[in-house]
Image 1 (cartoon, rainbow, N blue to C red):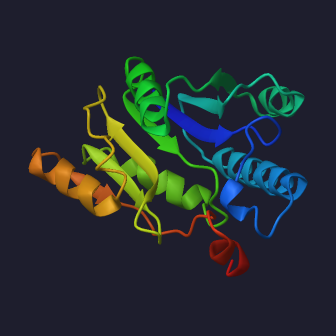
Image 2 (cartoon, rainbow, N blue to C red; image 1 turned 60 degrees about the vertical axis):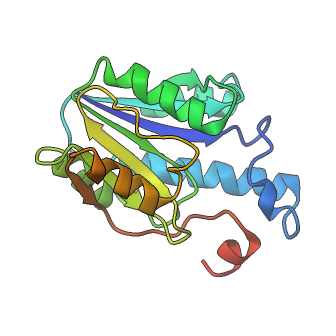
Length: 193
């Protein structure tokens, strides 16, 4: 089974995309966040993959009607992210999900260029690799996937794609990369979509 996990802030209670505050109001940032979530879910639902568990991990909580509608419309499991910081929340998700899956993938949500083709490649490349990473243009990553039980590769030094790749390779684990994408974090990112 494949566990596909979308990680997001709640567009309403999570104060999303705060770095876009200089150019967008809170309502505009909520609208953009909501649209990016819906776009990625549409791309995920284009996948023709058997035995896939689709999870929507939300911070700070998943009780908003928006998420309840997504759960009903697209058959997603709604879960709250747990942990004191982003790294802890990501690790907790990956540890939990990998207990029940052959392949586990975690995605960010601020990716206007993410397609089902990229996701399909990430899933298939795990047949022959221990890890797959989706690099972003800001030297971070938008996707991390692996087969088997989670190996502790995420830490505060490895949120940079280069350090994470080096760490994985230095631990004799095989790695594949997907297409590099631009995520939307800053006003410059937003204005040059």
